[in-house]
Length: 320
Image (cartoon, rainbow, N blue to C red; front, side):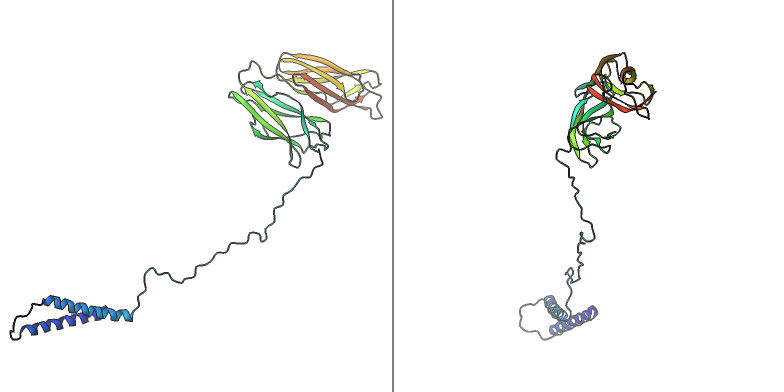
């Protein structure tokens, strides 16, 4: 198409030049206003180009660049999330009225105790079941917030069932930080169903101390005992082992839980250093049955320094 157009322009140009040459070779007449030959040629060419452009426009309709086309854009439909998916169910815990009530009877390392840097200590809470439901060994003391204080676990399970109106001890070994200051950890009793009850704290000040904290860390007795005189009147000395973590004087009260022995025994035991010492509690046992076994159940209350009860109830004594 462009080649044909150029040919037409060339022909028009030659024809115009021929006309001008012919006109200039005729007889000379009166002077007329001078017309620029180049302007005439340019005008003629321009008019011819305009006519050709209009003709081409009528024949070809150009496509404008960038014009939006009618291509179909795919539509993405969100998947229905509820199809085939299980509905979350919120599990509720239904408990009887006053079922869960936990109180603090006593504790070791009372809040505000000064502890030396890096010193290890045993925090023991004596907690009472003031509710109407029995606690089982699925219950546990769980860490909630604050400072863990080197505890090896964030939960400590109960070691025995705790009936309403009774209490149990929960002990956790901890370590004081190496930097001076106040440190507090918050713990709660948690049921086997995940319900938290009570608030129990350990709050210490780490600083200069002349000695490690003094406390009774355990009270135990033999795992077995035999050759007891069981006649309802003879006293049998039962050994009890008291262990402390530092020097000091321990004061205590001993009770015969089953009432075989008369009254309680009060006493004290000095410790020159950390360690264990033995005291004796004289118990009277009734005439046994055919199996010759008797219950050796003792309640030990450590007045100083713990203000804490220890229950010794795992031993069956063997009579002669």
